[in-house]
Image 1 (spheres, helix red, strand yellow):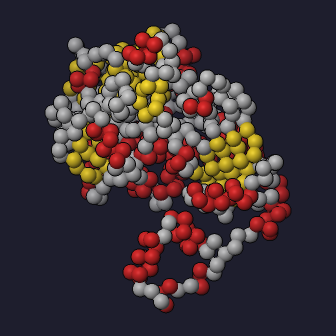
Image 2 (cartoon, helix red, strand yellow):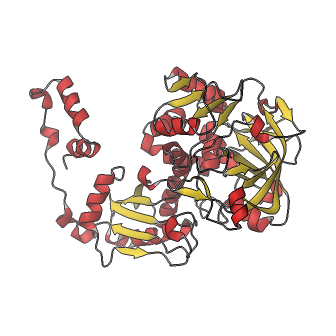
Image 3 (cartoon, rainbow, N blue to C red):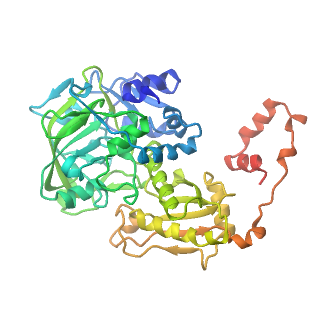
Length: 497
């Protein structure tokens, strides 16, 4: 248990001590510059901007989740690719939050004459954006509005007025079910928590399959399970809701039943999905839509150098946040269908978040044959708008795009191994291919070898275990050659395939 995970500040101290924080002291502009810097240095060190233009005394942190090795170290996981199993353990063994009377997030409380964007250094991500967005706020909805649980999620927000914003929620998400169905005509009290403890960000940004984590789950308790101790919650100042006590900033208010456009241009055009919004998780520009309005009643924050956090929607860090719990849920779903058949899952970084899933199976007996197709079809059904599901054997490296392509090229039976989900099923509505038509259905690919034909598919292998390169080369020379090799060449050279 890493007690440094209690809040963002102590986590940064831990990362700084490990030499994993890059401090940027020159003035940084929330308009385009900070986002561009984060994108340019994605998958690198944590970025701590210490001098924000127009916001004296405020700091900004970026790229904190951009390396899987970093997540593994923080949460005590030896092998970075096994972080998904830590998330699954948290889902199965949640730790309930603790209620406190006083909290760091409420050291300063602003309740009158609110102008949120004058208080918070929200970013403008691209020149096409209609303004500055909040992309890293963890929405917390509790009690009767969340079926007795706690709904924790990250949504895109655009403050179009000093104290009101648009809040987008996919209708198929937990928050979407609450807003569109469960409490459709009600003003829902909630808080938006920014700069939370890392486990809270992971739980809020995570993508859960509803068959594994249904609405009504205490998702704050999942964060507690992930960090190994309770998350502290405090009663909000102005609404009947709770806030993350260790957050850097909290926006309090009501999610209203009133519909609004996400941008002025969309309102002028009176059309959805036309006006540009900001670079979305799909890798394409987002489009403004009609969503529900949020009315702010207060902004609270820490008194000493509060830290703002704003991930890029299309970034490696953002994908790791979402996909870690997503991988955990797909693995659990497969175990419920046929325990032990699936030995690992992976969402390749090129798939992005909410993209495809790759299952790795080890067929043990003839009765296992066919279950791989059940798992693929279940994946297409369990995940809204899943574009791709692939399943391969245990001898294929699911962390290598090249090895996956090799398996697809040599093992797929195009007549019996490729099938699709039902046309017109629910999609995200955010991929350009969905524009103007129902979701065309995901594609499932069975790239496993029929168990009885395995002898015909034995991979050619060189006997590297009998090799000692030190016979000819020094360790320095070996390292120099390995540095020249591609990642796939190193994998093949290391396995003998």
